[in-house]
Amino acid sequence: MSIRVDNEKFDISGVHNKFADYVVVVCSCCTEQYLHDDEHLRLYYDPHDHTKWFITHIGINDQTKHYPIPCKGCGKIDWDFTDLKERDKAETGPWRNYIRGW
Ligand SMILES: [Zn+2]
Image (tube, rainbow, N blue to C red; front, side, top):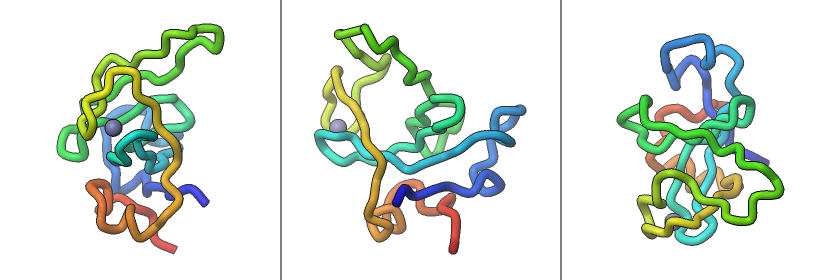
């Protein structure tokens, strides 16, 4: 089960926040945690700076999939991410203040 974030707690300005679907994700290589908006395909990079994000939608035919910023955990340029499944890791991770309660 994906770990979702409370839109009220993760307060960014603008209309995007209202319809956003935030999920905690991890780098496939080093498990550094990030926040991904599944609705608008934005990856939030820094829990202390919500203006730091980039679009993760890249054409499916694009074989050279590169995000604009290297992973801050492992420094890889051609990194990718996957949903974090372990809730305990999210609860001790950098985005813990925004996690939706049960
Ligand atoms: Zn990494």
